[in-house]
Image (cartoon, rainbow, N blue to C red; front, top):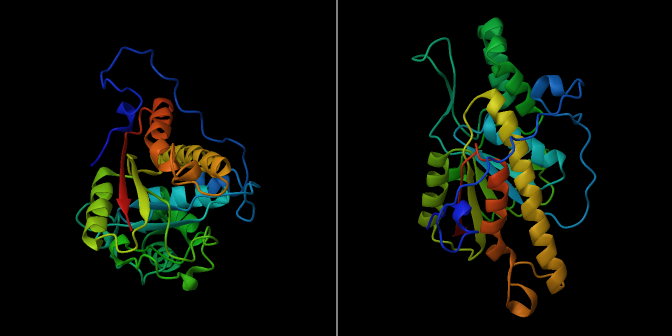
Amino acid sequence: MATDPRLARDPRRTSTPQHPPPPPPPLDTQPNQYSQVDGISNPPNQTREDGGFKLKFCTVCASNQNRSMEAHLRLSLASYPVISFGTGSLVRLPGPSISQPNVYPFNSTSYDTMYTELNGKDPRLYRANGLLTMLERNRSVKFGPERWQDWAIGKPRLDHREDRGSAGVEGGVVDVVITCEERCWDAVVDNLVEREGKLNRPVHVINVDIKDNHEEALVGGKAILELADMLNTAAREERDKSGGEWRNGADGGGSSFDDRVPDVIGIWQEKWPNLPALWTLAWF
């Protein structure tokens, strides 16, 4: 069942007037070569030094191009194991008109191929609308867009070793899926129901609603990284309390990470009220 995480912290489920929460923090403005490409202050060969326990993440949008890839990059630079997908039937990018999109198949077309094709068609147009800049970022992250519905969950991803964030997700499973649009969340949840949870492995599916433009993707990527940090802290705390087990709580009882997720999202939502969240617990 879908749950509004903002209600999780109020057992009476009633709303009370509150002062407006503070606005999200500004984007990083430290100038460097990489931030000019995608708004990230880290250079491409540098990750945040943060060892220890790490949750495994998956980011999802419609075409695995803009929002999911911005979040994928941010999480990988923070040393999280991460993979990403799209839920559409085809990859669709804006073209010279609304009726003339650029369409590509998932799984087989590389970001580099898309970049080369669009740069050959109309470099001025596709540089101005941000597509070439986006594809430059994407091809530094992984080979090309992947489709969620085609993902063989639980199958080793040995052919993705060059992808950013691939270390830790070689086994083909994750702990948290973060979608960037409600229809993508619906598609992921419906698909997991269809798969019937044959691995009997719980997975948290969270939607962070982000408008599909480059500016909002930058803000959303930063918010998703903050949510990932909060979730990872909660999981680490449960792991430390129970001596290694972070799902079932100490001695198999009491609080667990799974129990705490709605509260964590509720706290996060107060800081990012312009990015509405949904959550459910599903199964691989």
